[in-house]
Amino acid sequence: MSRLVMKFGGTSVADIDRIRNVARHVKREIDAGHEVAVVVSAMAGTTNQLVKWCTEAAPLHDTREYDVVVASGEQVTAGLLAITLQGMGVAARSWQGWQIPVLTSDVHGSARIVEIDGTKLINRFRDHSEVAVICGFQGIHEETGRITTLGRGGSDTSAVAIAAAIGADRCDIYTDVDGVYTTDPRVVSRARRLDRIAFEEMLELASLGAKVLQVRSVELGMVHNVRIFVRSSFDKPEDIDPHGVPPGTLICNEEEIVEQQVVTGIAFSKDEAQISIRRVEDKPGVAAAIFGPLAEAGINVDMIVQNVSGDGATTDLTFTVPAADYVRAGDVLATSRAKIGYERLDGATDVAKVSVIGIGMRSHAGVAAGAFRALADRGINIRAITTSEIKFSLLIDAAYTELAVRTLHSLYGLDKS
Ligand code: ADP
Ligand code: ASP
Ligand code: MG
Image (tube, rainbow, N blue to C red; front, side):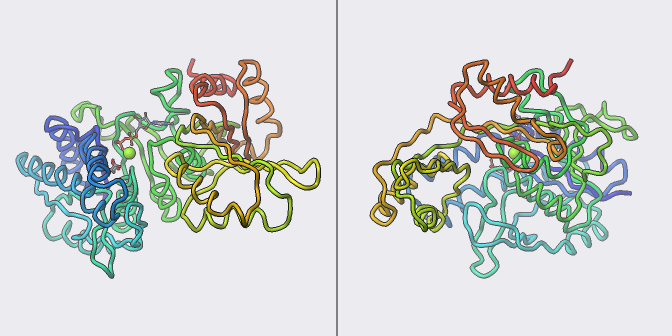
């Protein structure tokens, strides 16, 4: 007998038929003799609608109330799945984040899980032989007792955290694709499914735009050594061989990957904005004067490019921020203008960041150079570059995103044959 966490995303629970399909997947594991905790997302589109209503009610709203609203989607699907399972003769009970409880920080809208005590769930497996159907995405702040949410895509994180708390043998992430691909299979039809990917690479892919797993879930998996398996919820439960290995991708330690490629995958994000500060004074303390106030405003700065000053007096400084923070970042810089000392601010939101990821880059030189040539050959201009040990990222015009991703995908031999 194993103990499993099965997580189902929004598309997988989008209507009653799909919830019934999910229930059959759960029953399949119960019939195989496993203890199961299920984590569900809200129905596809629900969270977007709830977010939209909050913004319509007031563009700048209290994030504690935002959490009250957006956490509600998961309550519906958890209840419906429990009802469906019970209807199939499978003992099941739903649990909201506060009932577990999933204790989090008080950063409403993107809270971090602080602690989950899995004892109650484990005892109930023993005493009631019942499936726990848990609302993903939700938590509670211990001191205030207020409901929190874990940021968009946060059900993945709920699932991995629950898996760690109950010592699950595996955390299966059921979604609308049958695994992690070399890049988004909806954009590049020649993307290949990976049988395995290392935690470090998945962390980069997720944080650089591949939304198949929330970044924090990969971090938790890495720290607590949870085996995460990404697979499709659309496979027919009755077609799955209980003794075979289904199609999917295992997120695992680097050592478990036999054949390591130089490049494993390509991620992209259009949720970026570029800000250039022109003719900023080239003197000690300027970077602190620029990035200090942005950090205080909670704005995440990513790619930073600063020219060496030509005249020894002024220089240009370019960096990226999340598109959602673009206007606020401009405001913050305008307010600090006297302190920083610059001529003008330029900006662009029609930019995209394309990133190439692979642990093999640690031991191979010149990987990025090939990309610069290939993009130049297609007339794609690179606005900024950043590199780290296992990835490099390029900022380009958003209009060329798909072309750039496809070009690099072929260049690094990732296309399926
Ligand atoms: P869920 O609702 O199940 O949580 P998401 O929409 O959050 O599903 O994530 C799955 C989606 O992630 C896929 O439909 C796919 O378009 C996208 N995606 C982006 N990059 C990748 C990738 N490298 N591999 C697989 N899917 C990816
Ligand atoms: N329902 C939430 C969202 O859409 C959480 C999740 O699906 O993981 O972001
Ligand atoms: Mg998701």
